[in-house]
Length: 252
Image (tube, rainbow, N blue to C red; front, side, top):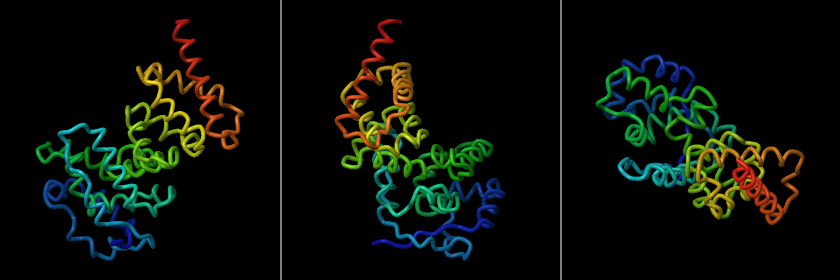
């Protein structure tokens, strides 16, 4: 059953950020659910979300973290499917989620009850708050999962789960897709790159080779209207870029 997504006020955000150290026992303990009905924590966003689904985030940290992140990215993306990229850049939304709906997940994934106070404060600042677009995209406990899903769905809408597995294969692949919004918004070229990564293991065999591949994509892709290409044409272009990487490697 869907419920209405909410956000906190600027005043509530400032209070939380100012009082991280004095709230450490709450972060180590049961969290902030006593505040969820406070007016400053209960502002409607006019968007529904699947609260029950969001509550199924996998807290496991002992298995392959890439597999867990892929699973949790699907959960967050589907639970918060009504969010737009613009709203997904709002810290007020994500701070409420990481303090309430996803507090146990955020705590299990990023905080350690046994950390010294200074280390715990640093982790909270990095992963429970999100003061910049980069922090929202890469560091916040939950928003980073939403962006994983959003990029994967943009690149390969017919198989989001497979796209997530490819994008999250290495940190370098993720950073290239998430940071290059221009690329992920062009489904034809982004999808072709993911298909190449899936079919040609040599592209991601080393970090150096993958970076060379992406540089060649950028160099030879300038001026091409990728939106006008068919999938077959995009695959052909990316295949030619793969060949150029091989030529450069052999010459070296």
